[in-house]
Image 1: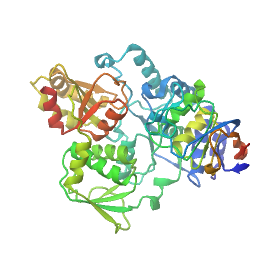
Image 2: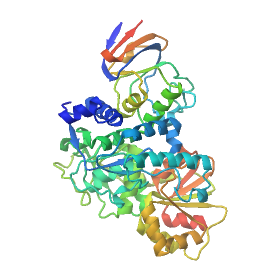
Image 3: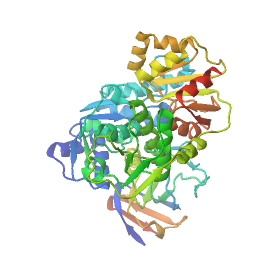
Image 4: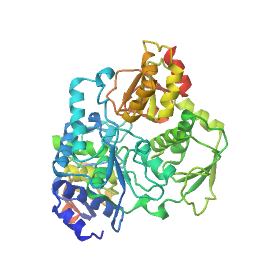
Length: 129
Length: 393
């Protein structure tokens, strides 16, 4: 299955999907030291986003979240790529400065955790294997 | 988005690597939000200064940008994680101090005026009605849009910096007249007075309506200090960038919305009860947003000749220029002789104080939010007078 969306930041990557139907706040919601979701009551609480393709509806919370994404990308504690329904400024800026491949406007209900995904952000496509 | 020849060249790297990266951010945001072009701005306020939030990777990114990035418009800076001169007084450790100074130096190299204040409008970055600006710092964004009638989106640190390096911002959101009209009318049916009550009102509206643009009636008057407290709280609890307040804010409202809700005494009491943990207070924080001169004068006169309880810590956060005038007027001495501390350049939202205190009292609803969330303190929202009484008890 091939899904097409909109390119937020260029690049190609592949990996295992980690999917949530809830928005993510990277500042305060994810521990940049180990990439574990720490937001209380979040569907992904306690799970690691390291080296995953993180699939979620949107970002939320403080704009410091952009720097958190950047920090995780630089220290290897971040996701390989991001797929969103609607990308907003916090995540977009985090992907640009962290050089994380990112595509949005994807029907994320088609993707489940554990699926193998390839992102070709240059062409704004996601291949689900 | 349509780009001019110069903008195209900036995007291609002809004006240096930092400008190229800045254009990449601005163009991506413009495309996400459907902007047709970039527009010139008259000033920028950059947030994301505390080393506690940036850490080493964030600092690396800023240092890279500072290699060849220089601002093209007047740009001021948000608070740092410490008083840049008297950080030892606040028991900040030496390593943090060194790193924090590196962050501020990187901003300085880019030509940013290192005001280190969240109230740029009190220190010479004062846009007038209708001017396009690109500000980060949510409380200042809300103040600039609503109270001053300038036009800005809620920028993050990197997007505000990008706008500063290019001198432009994508035209979308609050830059466009049609996106600034109120969606719902608020009838305030209770008296609201003092920074703490205005903060509570911001929480009531933010919790209830999120970032809907409101048209607020029933507030006959408000001071600058009350409005800055309201903006800080409303932006914190609701993510609000713009409101209208009848008789106080300047934006031209085309139509007052038919849909309305009332804010009553009971709503205000509920907000206060939610910011009233049963706790022993050991930390009193005033000056969120940064204390104005008139607030410092007020506090100085309240504390003159008195002593605060040595078991309690009192921080009054403000901007360097305010502190300097307070020094001249003798306010600093009156305050510090009591045992309270004036902390310039910083604020309790971004300073590394997690774990140092347990119970926080403040007249700022925003401070209470970050005190309980980020720093895990128990919190109590109360008037400035009550905070000072608490400090002396």
